[in-house]
Length: 454
Image: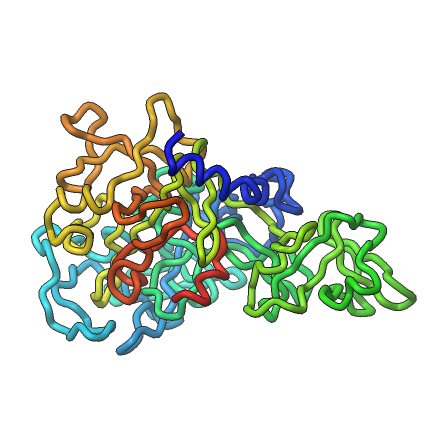
């Protein structure tokens, strides 16, 4: 076994069990546990679909996920759409908007002859002339006179990237840095939670938190009828207590810890917060043996053979040899904030960042994670795609020189040529603003690590 393999195996032995998705994550027993949302009125022709990464999402009659483009503060202004104001139209933008310093406005964008308009990638969800508002669903008039559906006043769109019902390849709810570009966000019904709770989208699943963003934990020694956390245990762990009028509902029940003091129980597990957590939506308490975060829905399983590696800054996903896996992010500085991290998008930014415009240098510095012979995609989130390494675009399976590579959310993943040992993350944050806007980030398995390193 190579140094990568042997050292990586030793580093991961104590970690793999914590990330065996769907088996050891608390509160997860299958898709039925993801089907936990509040029923809301919907206009005819819309539905709710449970996506494997983003949970319940609204979809049109053909199963296409609905997205919004919420207004977002950037370095030098705002992007996205203000409530009630569509901003995605059919004229391609041609110059930078100057929203992200230090780049000024007015610089010509690349590949203008093939640059899509906003509506090419984000078709608006149009309403018929006789459509009627329902609940939070309203109808807006676009500047061309067309009518567009909105939810909670945000105009709705579908994504050209989504190909099958339940796909959420156009955008994600996962957010962990205020300077992230204004990506589109899947829209869905509210989760079925008692007051005082919320859900946080993380790299390992849809995590339960309190409404004030404190992470919620479960203890392996507990059951639905009794708590084993007593005495000294309570110096570090605070039971999540329920108000006097709280009642059991669905997956939620109550445990009486002492007369008049009731604790929330979710899917048979009494809930706590960790008094020593240093960040909101932290996962630090899960480092304590016997304790784990609580998830409404786990993230889909990564490919067989991938490993977990310990780094100085936390755990990362790695290939079978222990090399850290990186994901490429890109959003251009234009008024319509189009993403540029998909193989169908322009590759100018990526090639410039990874190899000074030279595809061969990119392959040397940032090789694709190749799929092994006979390997198959385990789900929709982790798939095998065929790439032309000269262009970075999709290719036919039998195209000369084409590579079968692993992709996360339809985007290829990479390793870094400068990483020498398992656990190295020397390539992390390569690009603009530590890779936040255009660049590569390590595939961290805990989003709370990002709060301290970005």
